[in-house]
Every structure is written in C-alpha cells, then in structure tokens.
Amino acid sequence: MSFDEKAARPIAELVAAGESVDALYAELLRAFETERGGVRSDDALKTFRDRWLGRKNGLLSATNDQWLKLAPRELKPQVGKLQNETRKRVEGDLASLQETLAAAGRKRKAIDVTLPGPRRDLGARHPVRLVLEECIEIFGSLGYSVAEGPEIEKFFYNFEALNFPPDHPAVDEMDTLFVTDDTLLRTHTSPNQIRIMEAIEPPLRYVVHGKVYRNDAPDATHSPMFHQLEVFAVSESTTLGDLKGTLEYFAERFFGKGTKTRLRPSFFPFTEPSAEMDVTCPFCAGRGCRICKQTGWIEVLGCGMIDPNVLRSAGLDPDRYQGFAAGFGLDRFAMLKYDINDISLLYNGDVRFLRQFR
Ligand SMILES: [Zn+2]
Image 1 (cartoon, rainbow, N blue to C red):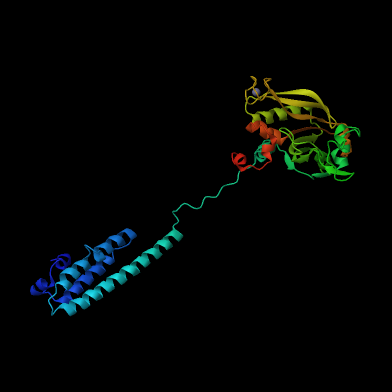
Image 2: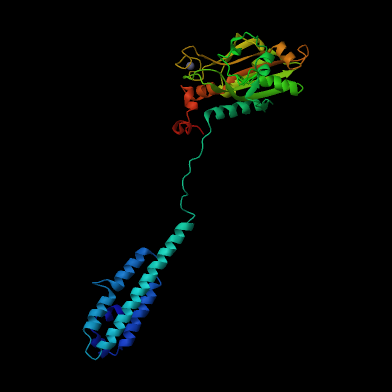
C-alpha cells in the first residue's frame, strides 16, 4: 500500500493492520523529503506545495481528516503531536525551498551569458566623412599623401601667395572672416599648397582637406563653414595631361564606371590655365534629370596648372617645376552622392538623418 493510499484510510484501520503511528508519520516524512529533492523550478514547487499542503486534496489534509480526526481516543495525543510536527516541518521546508529557488533565479539572471545584452546604438559615420574617406582612398591608391594645415591662416598664405590681386572680391571683408588684420579663417585649403611646397622638395603629390569658412548666409546650398578637399602634384614633368588623366580616374571610381568628364575653361588666380570639370550625371547616366537640370552634366570641381607666380611664392623655380591642382567641396560631393537636397541637413545634428549613413 502506498503512503498516498494509507493517508486516505482511518488510522484505526492501519493500526489494526499492524502499522504503528510513529512509523506512519516517519514514512510520510521520508516521502516528503524524497519528493522535495526533485523540485527545481517554481512550477514544480507549486505542484509540490499543492500535493502536500493543498486545503482540499493535500496529503496533510488527508491525514488530518483520516488520522487525526478519526483517531480513537487513546491514539489522539500521539497522532495530534505528530500531525502538528509534520505540518510544521513541511511548511518550514517549503518556505526555505522557495527562498533557495528564488535566490538561484536571481543568480542565474545575473550571469546568464545567453541572454541578449542591452542594446547600444552604434554611431554612424557622417556622410561628409564617408566621402572624405573614399576620396583619400582613391588618391591614396595613386600615391598621394594626406595633409590638413591650420584653419586660422595668415593673409599671405590664403591670398597673396596664391596670386590673388589685392582688389580681388574674395579678399574683401564681405566674403572673408578676418580674425585680425593679418589673420583670417581660411577661405580654402589652397594655402597648404604653399606651406607644403615651402617645406618639402618636389616631386610632391598631396591631398589636403579640412574646414574652410566664408562670410555666407546659410541657405539650402550655402553654409558659412564647409569642407574642402584639394589635390595637387608638383614635379619637373607634371603636365595638363596628368591632371586630366588623374581626374578621369578619380571620377570613374567616385561617381561610378562609365562616368565621363569634360573640362571647360575657367579662371582662378592660382592656376593657369584654369578649368572647371563636369561629369556625366550619375543619377541619369547623362540622359537628363531633375538633379542635372536636364543637361546630363554636373559641375563638380575646379582645377588647373599651378600658376608660375604661386610656385615662385613658395620658393620654387617655375622654369624647373610645374604642377597641377584641383579642389572641390566635400559637402557638395556628399549631397550629390546621397541625393541630399539641403546642406543644413549635414550640420543640424538630427540623429534620424545621420543614422542612415554607415
Ligand atoms: Zn541627371
């Protein structure tokens, strides 16, 4: 007879069949202890508790009804004492078991390495940065070094050494942010041509990039601060053909295979001859669209052969050395590459916009 069956019978019947009261309660406790060892979860604990302490069908309710209540007078004190002790023992053990399981649960939570970690937003690279890195990568593959230079520049390096006549409109305070009479926020990255030519013997091949400043009111296409990148090369044999070949290579890699270029004559104080370069519109492959205003071409940069006066300002003999230079706005390139229609999007720090770029 299992102890479950015994618990459902009047104690007098069991005693008549040869059981002792002590042995019956001892068997009950042993069963409780054996079952307790198998309880490892909150669900199992609940089932276990119902089985032993359930008000209606619990084992201790059964022994209370069949053993204690129905006990003959002479057995009552002994059964009452054992029933009481057993209940206390079961209740106490269940309480400490619940405590142990809860503590184990907290510990598991603390070290469960399989749980996903807290989600942290990864930063995104700024579109201007992405374009800069791509340009450096392309020119780097052609052997160009990278330089930056000061943002607060001397008037001499920003204008005079670059062959700007004193009455050039850019020299005016209307366009340039002066710090003192002699220093200003550089309006372009070209002063570094002079600085590098002064410091290093040709042959030279450099990418110069950084922030430049103009006294412009901000609108969809203008910002008082923007990013410029220029490349220049100086040697005893650099030609206009080298300039054209370099820019064609760059345009195909940056704007995509099949991109065509064309040079249109232009004027800059620091180059002679000067040109502006157009590329076939990368959005419509030259067929004409909104972005290229139906022309099929987009103007992307200014370039030319370094003016002999500029070489002379940097202490180089223009009869021995020649070079080319080309420059463009990284912001404009980012706007072209990612079809961004307002330059202020690049600078107002809206995370929803910025996180699109990786
Ligand atoms: Zn187009």
